Image 1 (cartoon, rainbow, N blue to C red):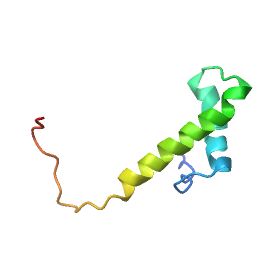
Image 2: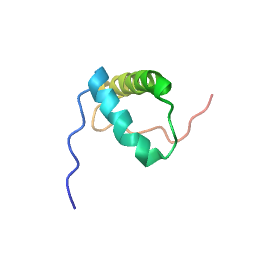
Image 3: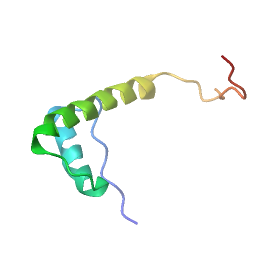
Length: 71
């Protein structure tokens, strides 16, 4: 099994986000009109920025999820 290439650092720049979009389009199988590309790249960048907030949040190794969630 081959090791996947390392992920680009977050937040993504335009070049990295564009490379991700270009790599994923054939895998997803959904056609994308050329005029949508910049909007899709902006969406990928926004999603990566949100992911960075979650990934950077400090949690102790002993933290466990709550067994029941109630509103």
